[in-house]
Image 1: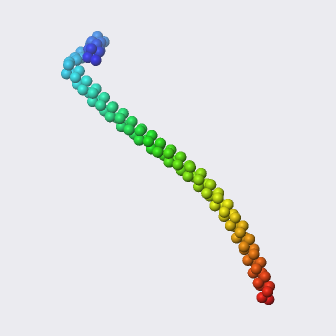
Image 2 (image 1 turned 90 degrees about the vertical axis):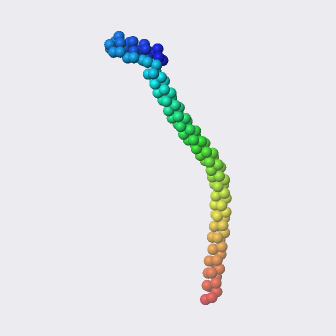
Image 3 (image 1 turned 120 degrees about the horizontal axis):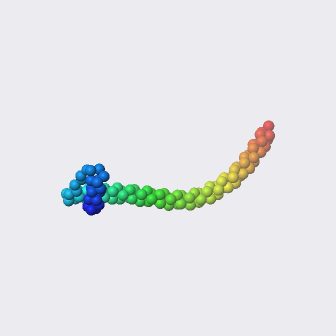
Length: 113
């Protein structure tokens, strides 16, 4: 790294006639800055990976819950169908009993007169 900076400094002298001095202190500051930047980026990446893991975990939990709810829904549909059938049967019986009650009421009214 230090050599490449020296090469660019030499190139700068030739092209722009500007001097750029690279000392070990400057190089160490560059390395220190690079290390700080690397730590920051690693932290950011770690946080993003954790967010992604949490999101995937939530999606997986939701998928599992949906599967369970789908099974429960199918069972509930079967029960509802059974209850509907029973209700229809009871409705037929109720209508039949109402007709009988109406007929008995008519017969009772005729007999009272």
